[in-house]
Length: 137
Image (cartoon, rainbow, N blue to C red; front, side, top):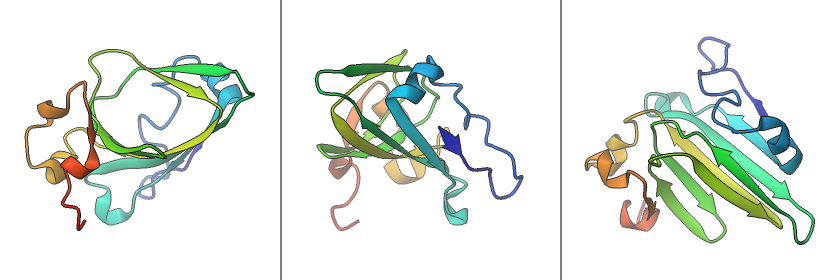
């Protein structure tokens, strides 16, 4: 897993390490995680972008448990493009086969600028992006 430093300070953002990943050593064997800084005009809203890739042997499933941060992640996967609200507790994602997920981690309350509704509507929910954004966007 790697991350780039923030452009202004040259040091990683507070949650850029493995702090939310339960058992980071096992995670390193199951998938790769790349973290990317947002464009300067998105920095007030977005903490970072991330890409997770995995390629597991047939029949192998890896359950990654995450301690969630209080924020929204907008995630694109082959079968779904959705806003993931803050889970009420630990979050586990099962990985199998080969895949990729690309996401944007918003700063706490940063997604409100795009949702225009209370963020509590997303708490413990995964909401398809098409129900949030105008299809023309």
